[in-house]
Image (cartoon, rainbow, N blue to C red):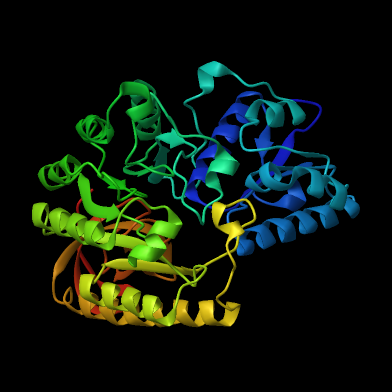
Length: 434
């Protein structure tokens, strides 16, 4: 146990990639005897791993930092450290505005964070992570950074250029996760499509997927695939391997050719439609998730209506839409942010209303069917879980009556679906599978 700080509260904000970073920090620190608390009031030190991607995330990060400062001023907490995306962008400004914070750290300063809390970085623990709940589902981050130049995005500025993690290293990390009870592995990166090109001279996503599938995880799911030059052999593997989920997160952002050019996406509407058709032809059982941006600089009403028509025609299984955020460290910051904020919000709501109707129709088709569901939590007597078509935190949930079956988080079961809403399924557990 260190004398400097024996109890630490770590708050991890933002995306699943941040979660992985926080779990790596915890594993290193725990190896040095540091204890992590469940509450800030029980800690000597608070660490906040921030998100700085969009305005709402920045605001949340600042508000949590202010709450930590209040704990320090009350005498309940001795030190505050803020790390991650927000300091990477605004370290100087934060140091000036929030002098109560003891130190700020960027996204690539894990050893320095550890030193600040009385621990040392150990290279032999590079693959180790302290898994955060739910313990049966976890993320495997296969690369760091991004070398794309999407106009709306500041991630290359925050995280640096694209660096693939070596395949053997990822397999070791996956094995450690499996030994710690992980049954559902979600493959993530800022861009999984490019995995391996920088290290091996070719796309290696399918090679990695095959090796992970051989490890006998229950479910393996693919998140955040860049549409340009997506390796379609991955869809063949998905169809052929039972433990590779019939699911792909394919963020398209828009469909109008002019806007796609301005966004520097490298693909056209025709290219997007051809890719979707090829994916669905190879695997008719696949569920596609996408993300769209409404109110990009210069987006006309006609261009937005083209996006509405595109979503209505393609009928994505899962779709999220966000109002454009004018980020000062993104290439699009040089453009005129011409769409009013209320219009951005209105367009976002309009697209999501359209998608709600599509989701409701698709869920109704599942009523009276028997589906495999993995349980995430037990709440007020109901077992809440997800199908293979639903990623943690962002997709549909199933609320199931246990019907006398003993289930716990991680349990895989067969369920009869008896009802639905646009984003939920309701039913009864028929059988426990594992």
